[in-house]
Image 1: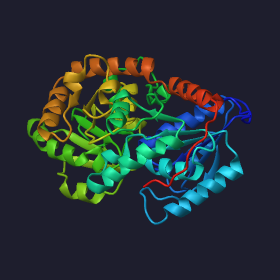
Image 2 (image 1 turned 120 degrees about the vertical axis):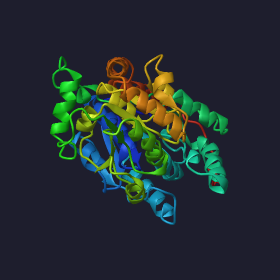
Image 3 (image 1 turned 90 degrees about the horizontal axis):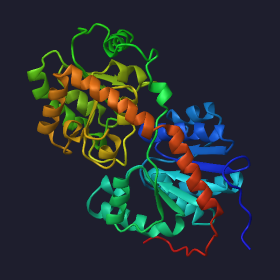
Image 4 (image 1 turned 135 degrees about the vertical axis):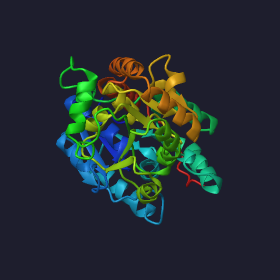
Length: 398
């Protein structure tokens, strides 16, 4: 007879294993943890202590344990797996929820199907690499399904990408959500132009800027995935058409120095910021030219703030947009010319930007509220935690 397990709610313990601890993955986990704590779940987060995540989830009421783990696989993997095994023995969770590739690797090697396990890739690891490494990543993900009770994809496109890679797993699509109240204007009746001017006045980097100057904002880790190098190549023709335009890159990361070296004076670097809300409100347009995603959080936050977006057509982008806006707001990945044309067209048409911004906010309110996401995850937990356990083979992945 299988041991009785709690259903999600009071008395249920969920262990979130998380690496990375910044960017979109961290924001998704923060919001989800907050909603789960409110629902009565005992939420435990194991993650590296550096970065904003540990402190943020502690403020939301989660129990936090240090998990010393690097972002990429390496010589420390064996120790990282042992740490997870020790934490599982200490915490005795009803379910483990591993976020992103590294946590999915170490967590499933440690647990090996002994307790209910949910894996959320937040974009598949094999999209980030090619050659032998990419083939090994696909092989691992196919093998690891035997230790995965449910894969949670953040978009239908991400699910299809996994299927094309041969990942035959029980899968649920749960779209990312955002705390829509956090991004709403302080005065819901405020004129968007007044809100933008007020936001810029409160940001030293923009305080001296001509109020009429168009401002484009890109929020994301400064790394190859997010494609800021593509945006810089697209920016040159934008500035030729609109000389007063300014581009602000919000975030930090491994490509920061190279991007700064390649950027013209019309590009401003805000670095890592504790709160992205003022930057969305200061923007006329928000751009995210990613090379790959599952479903990016930044565009949802921008739309929740009433700002139009231009996105590269990667997994999750089409699903995140309001219906009928694909032709204006989507461009092919790694296509600076198409990106420049889309950005320039929207910067030149204020009424169209405002209309798209209003539509985008309503779209996020109705579809991407984090409370809906939390309820969908609770349903996944309930299904996984109450399903009969089966015998699982435990081979070492080749």
